[in-house]
Amino acid sequence: MGALVFDNSYARLPEAFFARVAPAAPRAPELVVFNAALARSLGLDPASLSDAQAAAWFSGAEPPPGAEPISQAYAGHQFGGFTMLGDGRASLLGEVVAPDGRRFDIQLKGSGRTPFSRGGDGKAALGPMLREFLVSEAMHALGIATTRSLAVVTTGEGVARERVLPGAVLTRVAASHLRVGTFQYAAALRDRAALVALVDHAIGRHAPEAARADNPALALFDRVMAAQIALVAEWMRVGFIHGVMNTDNMAISGETIDYGPCAFLDDYHPLAVFSSIDEHGRYAFANQPRIAAWNLARFVESLLPLIADDAETAVALAQTRIDAFEPRFRARWIAMMRGKLGLLTQDAEDGALADDLLVWMADQGADYTNTFRALADGEAQGGVFETPAARAWLARWTARRAREGRAGEQAATMRAHNPLVVPRNHLVEAALRAASEEGDLTPFNRLLGALARPYDVREGLDPFRAPPRPEERVHATFCGT
Ligand code: AMP
Ligand code: MG
Image (cartoon, rainbow, N blue to C red; front, side, top):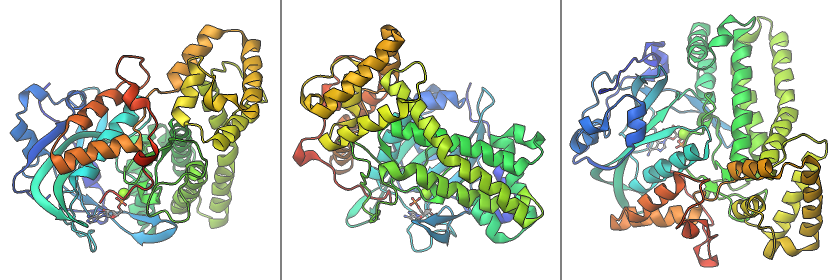
């Protein structure tokens, strides 16, 4: 173990897919957080790396040996409207092949202007970069597919937002940064060879078995759809609201990507929205499956020329896939809820049992995380559990579990599917405020520590489990710019 081993396959795609641009060299880079465990899994020995060297590598001041910085081109539907985009403030250093053979993109976010910056300054502020670090690592610990965070480095420069804020660069590690929007971009080029090159690249990275399928493009799509169904069901398991599920923020790897205005449910409501820019609730909690299906329809549209030579045939094949989304998601969601409810077998009424639980939880404004964990821990009494609707539901659930008669396994299943701690919005905000405004990373590191083992019962978790007091509640989250 020692250094990062780069092999930059995306940079070998046709030139239209990227711009070769070096990251900006910040004035006084300083390492703020470093993920030593992740570094090790990439083959980088943290002990062999000084803080100053890490700050230089992961700020853009001096890209690591083997890096070949580029900014990626992509398009996207943002809140339903189509735009040509691209990395306006990110630099893909390249792909690292880890000791276990897996390939990861290493990307700097907040690394300066690029040909895709449009009106933006290419920069990022410390608070939003720490937010992505914290929430992505929490998602990973929750067992949910996500991009990871290797480092946050402050730049020593201010970034002008509503106020001047400390600037920072985040190093993001991802299975890839291929987005639905990357394929929309390729389709918009109207260059069949470019689309073929991108699809081959994507198949090589994420769906090698699709290369041998009768219809490789459709096989790639099937794989991506399955990954998105699994991902969104997992988001719903932990009460995660992505907040900005634009097609450029949906990775075909099935990893959660782009932690901008994301949030976690405190009290359950299906239409919960936190993002300050989501005026119409397009990306509300319970709307996420529908939006995933909508984004996948944009993905399959981009692939149409490769699905069949005849346009009508291609559309018909694509449509069968999109039509299958809803029933497949529902089946996956019910399976996920069985985990939360400790149901080990399948019963035709399980979907209704889960639906009815959520109805009374919404009526009661029941805390999503704590209500499920109380069910898991046999503490479903008092408070929200005392209404007639809740009691009637508890009686049904108890009878359902009794029919299985495997109480020990049921309880273990529930404890594995219902976290004790999630990154509650008010705690995240408080930790970022302390870091960004007072330079105090203590609350950030404490929260990061609690979130590293979200299912383990241990001392000292109470402050991380309490729902916000009314004055602590976060009502809106803001885009990570
Ligand atoms: P996001 O909402 O973070 O997914 O970003 C949407 C688009 O805006 C992407 O093309 C970003 O690269 C671009 N963008 C976001 N912030 C900035 C910035 N400060 N400067 C330039 N481009 C940006
Ligand atoms: Mg984005």
